Length: 257
Ligand code: PGA
Image 1 (spheres, rainbow, N blue to C red):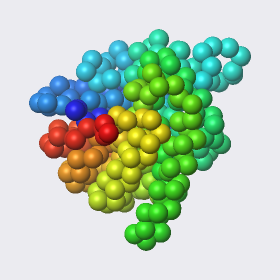
Image 2 (image 1 turned 180 degrees about the vertical axis):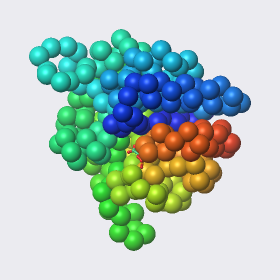
Image 3 (image 1 turned 135 degrees about the vertical axis):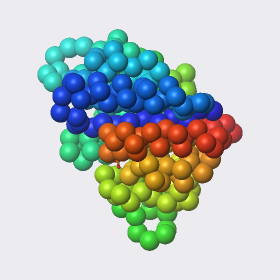
Image 4 (image 1 turned 60 degrees about the vertical axis):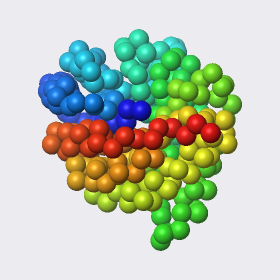
């Protein structure tokens, strides 16, 4: 299967002009890659429409979605509005929203449901806050709870829409990503847990300080179906290297057993 590369621009850049220039440049790079991965960019809501106008092969992502279709919810952007704009991937439960905006597993569950019902792909972000030593037991337990609570009662027909991003919080926004081996071990575990929860074929991405230099190493692990990239998605050279690395080793695809 095609790997998935999602650029999460977070609260950047500062103007619509910069957003359009960046999106056009990414589109130009993608166009020249043979056998390219699926590339999505998630700009701030404010720039989504302009970015949509400037891309063709790059698909549109959003950084969040409110769970009600329309109504008296001041300041929110709903899943229906995003769907009508042509958004395909919606990040849900990013650790920055959990930390700064108080998002709970229950709220995130409602968003996963709303996004999937609308026919878009929720990208459920999970990951432990800290890692002590080499032991992955505590991270596994932490992530299992997030998966169990955020995916409770999602109806079977909607499950194929799901994407999961494993983003260890301690690795986000720095230069130190998880090691490819540990990331792969966690992702394998996540796929097994998803299978037990009745989500048998979910692509699982890695996120947390992915950049041009470490992407190749991560993609050597076939279990990693793609990456969610923050800071480096704003730097063309890095993002190009990541997109190119995503084509080199075929991923094994979601676990189907
Ligand atoms: P980062 O962010 O690549 O800057 O670590 C990843 C994310 O928060 O999705």
